[in-house]
Image (tube, rainbow, N blue to C red; front, side, top):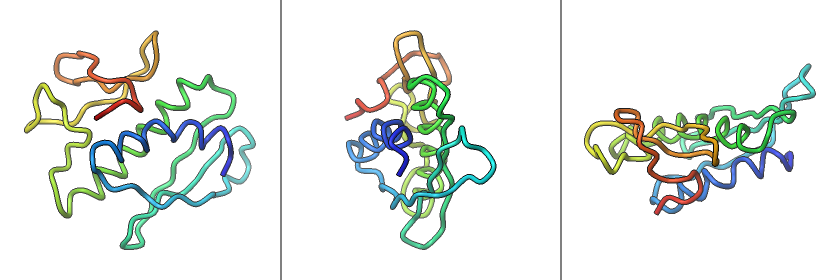
Length: 126
């Protein structure tokens, strides 16, 4: 896997593990025609998959935010079969919505989308 993509995925994969959410099988994937993009496929046990990609020319924080957004989409789809789909669950409103990924001046954070309170830096849930 592209080292920059692997580095961008590490924090959100840590959050999946820390919260007991499923973790995808990840396979390298070519993104033809765009040398700035590093991509991979996120695979579910049932064989369904979703792509994730980052722009190599962006700062690490933006890469993490981009990867976290795609992994969150994968996790919500994966969880709908067996559990609440609001991953990561917002501790301020646990029955209502998941947190959203936001790029903040001090890093990439999971934020309550309702009141915009930063709850946890991506990679530090649990």
